[in-house]
Image (cartoon, rainbow, N blue to C red; front, side, top):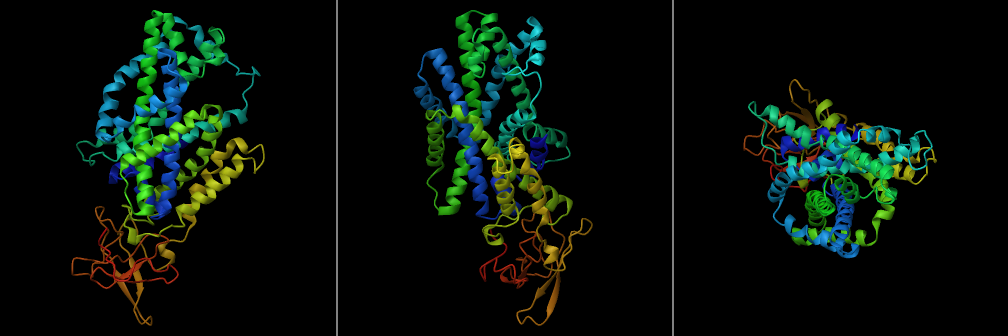
Length: 489
């Protein structure tokens, strides 16, 4: 529920304005350089899960072909590289053509158990865990939930596809909304179903296979043991390996592509240099390979639990900014301001929220708030991430500015150069297709200056020719270099 509710505003915004989550984050109170931190958080998510999926593929290659694990890690990494070179169009085609076979091979064991071994359902619900205590442990449930909540960053990968959506029209509105919901926050529904199926198969293996507990957490063994009940052993082994390889390739091409884009955005923004996406793709895959060779599976839960804290703070902060500051209270323009000259380098609104919410949840993760709260650390990040983006000063507190749903107009008091008098400039209604928050009607040259801006960025005076004169509120500080244009990127 948490992932779905936070993912919906992000998915809608990405599809509506064709933006990836990096640009959405930049315009949602993080600032030009502040969004680099969120890129790094997302890149960390991609190589952690790339390593996890690569490890599963290596297990399949070892079982089916006798490839040593260390070599399987390398193969599972190198096989992805050429597939990602050609971008999202090829990846979308790959996902489309491999899905039918993947679905068939995944569903067969589940249906077989439901039809041929009806008692497996009762065994599943009667399973009392490793210790057989007979009662659920809230702490253990929340620790497992923390691992699952690390998947909240998966929303960013979904957005890499959703941002290519066509415009919504009356003719395609129904299909457009279905695609946004199912491919956006709806991924968590499919993810939950897959987790339940995996758990169901694992319980069956533990209950019916000798020493099954040792291999029940390995997907290739889950499917192999059930395929053996249906078909000859060689065929069962081949299908189990094929299923594992297809599944991990489908997941890791997206992990690799999205991770390379995140590193590219971060590197070019900080260094002002572009080494090429393939270089940063190789860098991302190299980190994943190192994790695999270091046997990350042995401490996987700790890695994912820690990652969930920062991912939760980041995604909830952006979702809160879009939902409340943009749509509910209308403190920000509908279309985010992305131009470097119009943004803080590090905006204290959402970036500060990330530091507070993420820091608090990490302290809780390491037991700083007590052992009772430790399993709930990802949830600790939700409250401050929801509230703090709304708690900051707004444009209205810096000038007599109103932006109501009825008029979409703003009146900003701007100081003259002498500072002894004020003039009131009325802005025309902001258009959805205009990147800035409003355009002043008084400009006759075609380069209207921005009169009123979003919260914590302050209003901006103009000379009527599209050039910045000075910020209205001196407390805001110089936001643009004197003489820089407001109508450019």
